[in-house]
Structure formats: C-alpha cells, structure tokens
Length: 168
Image (tube, rainbow, N blue to C red; front, side):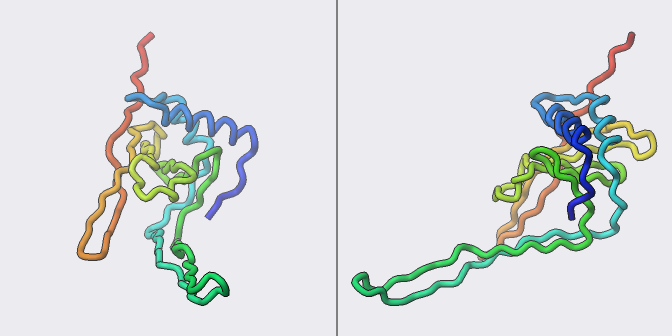
C-alpha cells in the first residue's frame, strides 16, 4: 500500500539521505539518520502483517500450423502477490521506505525481481522515544529445501553502526 505523496523537496532530500546511508562503509551519519527518521511519516503499528508470493507454471497451447507442423506455445510463469495488513510504504528514488515505530525498512525498488533477497533490503533501527539511531542491518536470505519444495525467508544481520561524534 503506497502512502501519501511526499513533497518534491522532501523526496529529493530523502533520496540523498538514503544514498548516503546505504553507501559503502562501516558507519553512517547519525545526523543523516535522524533527519531521515523525521522526514518519513511513521505508519501506524500493525500487530500482524503478511506478504506472500505464489508462482505457478503458465498454460500450454498445442496445435498444428499449416506448413510448419505441430507447435506448442507456453505462457510464462504466473505470479500472484498477497498482502495482508501491510504498512504504508513510500517510494523515493530507487527505494521503497516503510517507517514503523522504532524501525525503518529500506528496500531497493526492483528487489522483488531478484531470486535472492540478500543485500536488497536494510533495516534502520532507532530508539522510539529519543529517535537516536542504533544500527543498520542488511538482509540475508536463507532457503530450506525439502523434496520438490523450497521455503525461503529473509532475516537481517548487523551491517553498520552510527559514526561516533568527535568531541569539540
């Protein structure tokens, strides 16, 4: 579910903050994270939400073409997404951002086109009351296969810490 549109200046500033936040390195700017937390509206907390993707083989049409012989046309795989009680998300630049109390999920906009979700999402966690950033975690996908079935889930591993502020 997409959220209300952000003003153009807010979108531009948010995009720049996101680019700096996910740039290579071991730390991120506390001020950038705090500003990002302030810019993106917080979605109401949902007790339970679910997003699923179901894929199935497409149909096959067989026939006879004059002068060619027997032909077979296969449709591509069919995909259906199911979202239940999904929080509001904001599309900014190449990112999809979902801000919930104490955490902000940052996803690459086209991440759903990748089979492996590792490195496609990150999670900024912060103190709810002080809005002080705690850490940035990166997605890691795990897969469990049993016979012809594969089950995948995404977890988050530590990635970056806020940079220390130099004493004046």
